[in-house]
Image 1: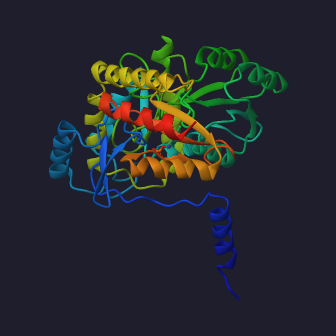
Image 2 (image 1 turned 90 degrees about the vertical axis):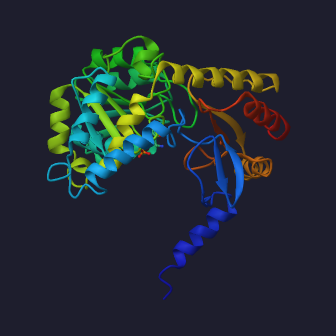
Length: 382
Ligand code: PMP
């Protein structure tokens, strides 16, 4: 009996559908330029929007932490894994997001799974945008609450669905910036509805932190309404240039999560080295860097406009929709031949036949690099 036959059949199916995934091995630090197989590429696919993964200040601070604290954390946060650096980072995150308290998880994925699973119970309802990130979807799957999907950023649809569940407890959850489309949640309306219907409001700030608002504080700053959302989740793995996830909220919710979120309790804490790089990365989120990123996004959108594409983005994510999966892969390969690295995003990350090039900008990209890419997109994507 061939025990692995069904897996090899599935892999063949993925290949036939142009949905098979492979990895490129990067031989350099993550910056606007990377090396693969000895060849240099301009990177337009990273979530390191402020180019902080290889920043000198961050590396110095991280090295100091390495010498003070060593490498591993040796235990979960509730046993031996909390260093002074973990506490410092949580304090800084709370003030960055203007909240009473914060809790750091090992990844953004674990934060979403832990928060959604622990804050909701049987009989509750979770209202979730249909384009929310997979980690939110998996958090919903782990919860015992009923899950109601609403149409993407469609607040009328959300209200219709809220009306059907009036009187129940629960949560409305949405990406702040949608990871594969780059658009922004209608936060004023979402929060108004949450308050009207007695639901907790939650936003995932993975792609908004360090990007939206003059200081990079995120979606609330973008709308000029800081402090209005009940639960602000985010990641340290994108603009901050490190790794980890976090939740900022009032003291009761954060304390509850420390006691109840299984992905927080039952996993070894992040290394102090990673935490030190997150603290230093957070310090580097300055209005100047955020403005440089925003200027680059505007410049690149203008350049794509000149090439005939109707694009606009207030985040650092600019999707160029190709549709067909095979075509998206072929264009991505063509761009690599020209020295540009852009990922082709396919199902199940996005819907079938909506494959795309997910272009992400960094604050450090030059005009020449953006001109070069816009020209190639014009040549290959029409
Ligand atoms: N939320 C969103 C919107 C994301 O895009 C991601 C990562 N791609 C996550 C959560 C998970 O974060 P992490 O990579 O830190 O696990």
